[in-house]
Image 1: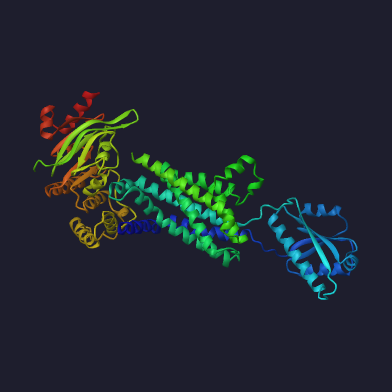
Image 2: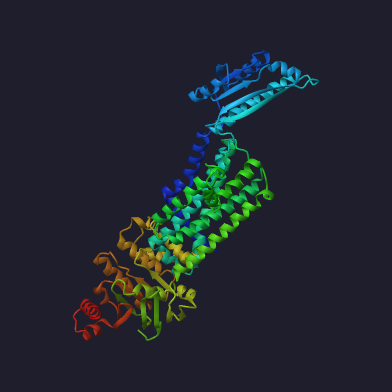
Length: 368
Length: 244
């Protein structure tokens, strides 16, 4: 055990004295979370919208006033017929159209229900979603104010329609994705590089000639990265909670356990990469091409898996990140527990065991 | 020098697929001996050495190092040997002291022992001012001397040196060999591979490997007589040419 602690201390010297790896370890997570967080913000401000008012009565005027007086929207155009909606969108002057049905007030009184259509330009699905949510919220508030008299319940039914991307599947949930990328990068790339560095420098031979067993060498190399990756995961979660007000609906404990599971998974991949690459450069290229690209492109982080062609969908199944993102979204956004995520967790465990088994086999072959 | 064997090799063979890297070699090394292991690049000397230090499994044959079977008691072998490779074997981004503490640690030395030994090592090499500097900032010759001393930390019976003086200037090589002799006089056995034929002259006995086989094994003096040569360089060239 004492040998082991000495080994780990040495590993920390390596990491702390190499500015590049320090930056990758701690600078990058913060930069990435900030970048993604601020670039892809969910806030909207003074969005230009148009109104198509078929009834032009007191109620619709009041609603329009409410909406334009909010800081979120400014009413730029009044449109007279449906045909001009498309043109307005195409010019890109407006992001949404409010379409009030004819006889809005009358219907509200007579039928207790009137409909307003919220049409959004969903070429930017994220903004579209936010706009429709904000508008609905304002309408709901207005409805509540109307219904202070409990005897009569009026209902304004907002009908939202996302133009150009009706199903709005690529809801961008950056935190799970960024967390996955960073844990993958730190764990797999950094370990594979640090193991191949020993090979390249010739110090691996010295370690193998020492009484340390090969698996002790590998575990000694990996433990510091488990520790650093956990710190990274905590930094990312704290940043997303406090800077971006991301919710964590589910259990923090489960989130921690699943993160550690994924970290170990990525580390075992890193070990596997180090057994097949002789130099640091190779290890880095294999990590970047073999891990980063699939993680970014095929994990569902940016591009929804369901809209990929079938072969790619099949490939996405063998990417651990895909399952981890599902788990993260489940815990952070939906607040579900292991009862819903056991399948994904089991897949991650299975993959981890597979990678470890293959690495052990490869490692032995190398020693023979 | 007594005749106690510390390394015994019998019919050792290593095959990589169809290629025979080490072909049925046998020899013995005595305690306190400086044993030179010579051969051209690719002659199989590094492969043979790797089998002796327990990181490569022989295909056939047997070898005992420090009384332990390299096949079945590799762990005991590793505890009783020191090793320094042709690649530089210290960590460049650690200081001399940190390297000593680390290597002492992985050999399971106690803290007090490590402290005492590192002090002694620094005194002997006169490295007081450099002890807390990163090894990467030292000249190569100094690094090799430190590496040699570090390989001796755990007081091994046998020291394996794989081309220890590659790329080092003649003066430092000379000093390095003085260190080797000092350890041999202390009863350590030195097993050294080298390319430099002048270094072969320093060895008590020399084995010359050509194409996986040991073609000659004797003291430099006897070898020169046998091959009617006036230097080990000539001996080596004659041997290599005969085979071709």
